[in-house]
Length: 262
Length: 318
View 1: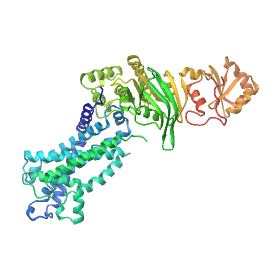
View 2: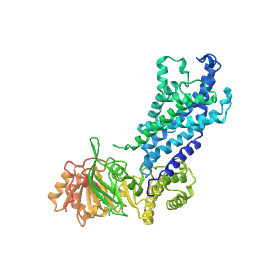
View 3: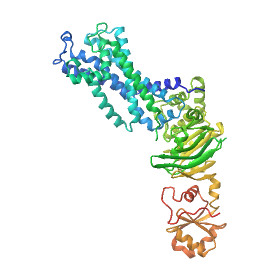
View 4: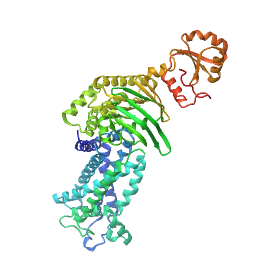
């Protein structure tokens, strides 16, 4: 017990996230039913009117176009909302008990984000099983590439959720802020409509949105080994996603170092 | 070496002064009660001791380790039981205890043995596999007590640990604390606003509006206010005191909202007093001073925050 414990705390925090999720059946059902419904409603609704801007991609229907976007949607929302417990527990005994333990604060961040990331990635992979429905067979490479992008994206957004949750007084406030942030980030990522057909200003915003790179990487992954032309190659997209995740994890670790009380 | 050593600690939240120049030491193995109304400064003092808050001025040490300079070392020696149990209701008792043990780096058979031992001491051994949400309030508190002790802390802070418990569960909780002291000799700091809980402590410190206004054993604090004494309830204590003092040669003073008369045969005085001041006396009692009286004398107002009579409360005469 000479140096601060890290491995056990991280493992315990991770395990707790998983146990909590498994015990809550409504979360299990909601986590899959919601994106599935979203995909079906939007997909079937725009199926007849949607047209890809590029001539060579004219055969792609909206259900197919939207598929990687829904994977991103699952990742963003699941990852962020696993941290909502931080809002409640920060003011109550549970999280305070962790803060007066010798485990370093960054280990608390790591355990929490790894737990949330695991849940988000598992759900994204579960949805990925539906890929053959849009005529794209699953392959080991496709699953592996989607897994890579999913891990970096989910890490980034659990960290983001943690940062906001740490400053929030109520879960209602957390919901409001996150929806205000997440929905535009998702809509302007090339998930819901292709950037190529959008106005110039919108296209620039989309280039600055880190989620665009995750969505583009997911889109390239599901067509592997013949990815469609994209504004950035897969490797660059993944690198940007990873850098974004690292930056947010850093901010989260810095955030919890601040004292709870002034 | 004291287990807890607080020297001239002042803390401000912005303009609000939560603690004013508090100096206090607690010897190892002591059951120390921190008594005071809400807003007295108990929680702020606990936040400082548990390394969650850096004091504006002064130093605080736990087991000779400065809480500001060496928070990590302090955390190993310290256990904290918060006002609300730090338990996840959807997890079982054992899962909760394992989780918190892991935060201290405990694992494997060491953790299992410790967890089972504490569950036995606090009477939750047969509930280890049950989810916390199925436990009664009293069992949750005792589980939370076990939770705070997994890493064998030298000092355990308990912040109003019996809040919301019925009398039977409170009694069981204090019995559990007594067993703990016997078994492990842990130094216990209990914040409370309940007089009967403070009575159970070896020593009591009274915190009011951020000041430590009195400190000593419950007996010494009460004896300083006189032994068996006569208490007169009246509408205007100061006036009645002056009149009694003018008429009889008695040791008389105002404590809180009552007139207190110290006399070896206090009840023999009653007929004479009723003859003289009957209309002004609402009721008369012969009893020993309580810690509530101690609080009122030193704080200058009642425990609920009302100021007592128009004249400032008196200090003990001798």
